[in-house]
Amino acid sequence: MLAIGTLAKRTGTKVQTIRYYEEIGIMPEPGRTEGGQRRYGDAELDRLAFIRHSRQLGFSLDAIRELLDLSDSPGRSCAEVDAIAQRQLRDVEARIDRLEALRAELHRMIAECGSNRVADCRILQVLRDHGECLSDHAKAET
Amino acid sequence: MLAIGTLAKRTGTKVQTIRYYEEIGIMPEPGRTEGGQRRYGDAELDRLAFIRHSRQLGFSLDAIRELLDLSDSPGRSCAEVDAIAQRQLRDVEARIDRLEALRAELHRMIAECGSNRVADCRILQVLRDHGECLSDHAKAET
DNA sequence: CCTGTATCTACAGTCGCTGTAGAATAGGGG
DNA sequence: CCCCTATTCTACAGCGACTGTAGATACAGG
Image 1 (cartoon, rainbow over the protein chains, first blue to last red):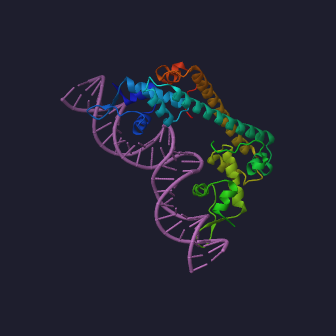
Image 2: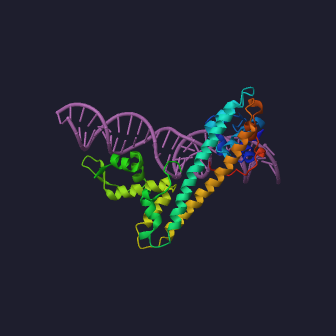
Image 3: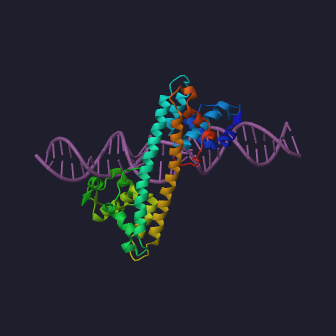
């Protein structure tokens, strides 16, 4: 039986994060000692490792919830799992595209500035006037 | 004199966002009508356009605050402006690198899965065991 | 003057945690 | 068995950058 701190160390998670996962229902309510402290078994350790690894790959907690639900039905087709992963991949790709447009614009902006006075700084001019931009970087999300 | 809704439309900003910017002190408190409604002039329009464009390029509100302060000292060297933009560029590049590692891992994961049963789904196996991963995608930030 | 749209304030909610305060518990050494 | 320290407990506030809501008030056109 593992205390919450041990579970945290083993999975590279903060203790509060584990309690947060319990609060939002993505981790189960574990057994408790007489004094009220949480005690975990191997199933919970595995589940938490799954969650953390999925988070590292950028899956949202909602997506992870779906994945966990699906993995409880071993006989089912894994088409849905596939769909969730595809969605995540497309999301990551969209973000890369957007960030690459930003990178190009920032790069150009910086290259044009010869470190003069603020009064005629190209960087500030570009920021003032979107029309100065070449690429289509306007889309929301940072 | 522009009402807040007009300012919002002209800059592609939500009305609440403008009020939020005022609350955090990045937009000035504008004049008011007798009835208490905000009225804006061209200076505020320009300032908001600057903020929105900078946000589109991924600058944080704190960075934008610095940029706005700097642009009020036209005689100064623009080295600091340059530094802020460089920092932003490096940040964007770091995020791209990280997302590309995620993309590779997701891609590999999906490719390995031949849409079988959940029980032997490669995607779920990889998520369960970080050891299955090739690249070093563990780093925080989504 | 009336009506409908816009604006006002104040506050809660988003996502995924992180940090804090103050109290209670667990486990090891003496 | 007692004590001490590290750990855990609950409850709540805060982050960044907004977004949405409710209920009241103001403004502009006909």
